Image (cartoon, rainbow, N blue to C red; front, side, top):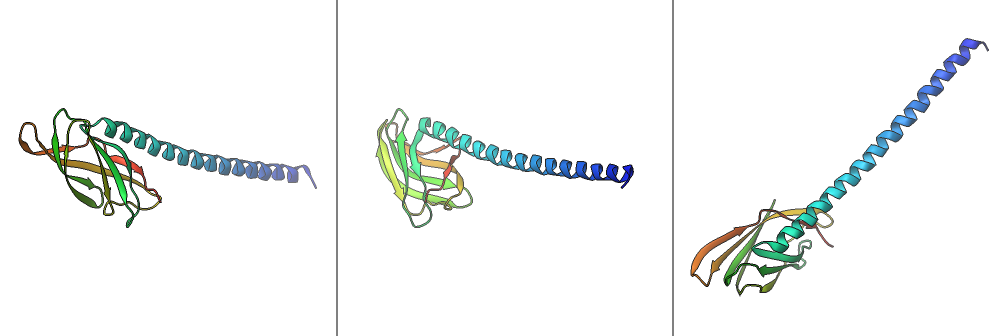
Length: 157
């Protein structure tokens, strides 16, 4: 066993150690990317809650459930006049329209429950929300409010 044989062994050992280090680095990046995506979704959910809590027609709280279960939206009139809320539309891949026909003075809340509004169990959702209503105080019909932010959350089981 001469000097040249050991030199080749050292090179192979170096390459093996380098390969292990690269695999560990790739795994670490994969894990961190997963955390970043999770954190980003959480930020969207927080932003959605802040926006919808202060919108003209607010959604104070909500729980969307899989198909066949009862989903809930707590809606509040943040406008400075009485409205007749005709319906709410949630749009994403599917569109859900719920007729309400509920009078609401400023500050009133209404609990909308529905089995037709649903989401995929364990998945996140993002819906564009549109309300159709009448300004009762001024007699203005055909009003519409579309949220600037989507309603974002995780589907409960």
